[in-house]
Image 1 (cartoon, one colour):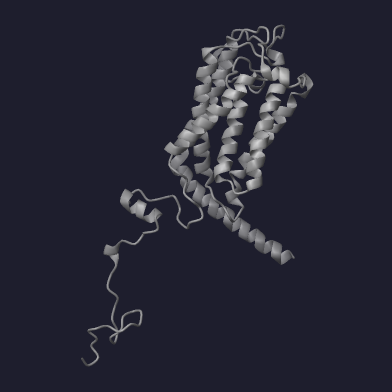
Image 2: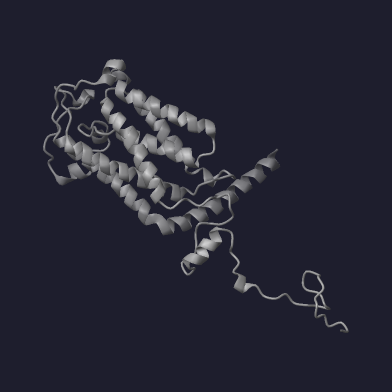
Length: 305
């Protein structure tokens, strides 16, 4: 038993080291895209912080979802956050499964480049939307009478740039249309739908996305319109952007996506299609005693003709 564990641990370590080498090469080529995507996450948070300064609390708007779904209450608002945290952590861990699992379909660096592209496009539209029209927040800390509904003028620039993290992120107001939680949830679910391998988890992802939508409305963190707009906007953005982005290489083949820069596009295309040998590079086989290297006779053998 000890020998088996030691052997499997050795295999896992070699697999991990091999994956580290591959991902470092991909990171060296794509770090600019990852850095840009992460910076855009910060700018999105900065924009959400800025709209809080101009938020004006008022009566909660009439909402069909509020009539249909019973209010969970302020003490149960953590339920939707717990579901979202589970979705986020599950997807994050799944993107790193190539480091330990033998059968894999994705590269971690490339999948996060793709996910960040989806998130940035959706968040760009979101910022434009919630700055166009500011609605009175339905959340408890955004209603009239709450000290957090309005932000006083900042005392310095750092107070704005640091986002008052994490309190400023949790208790934000004004960034309503459309739901940021649903952006992340739908992008993660659609990504696993395409690159995941477990049919049950794919189905479970959509069920959780629907449950998350209902919990957000029942928690009064967003109006129903914020969730509805997120559903069709995110799906449309991912659908069209997915067609524009280059497709991820399939790991079921033996070829790595790292192709040297000195190769031409035509050679790279041949390599990816499995036609790596150029016909011009084929050389005649050596002939020995009237036979070629494969053992077959030739017409001009030199054994007494």
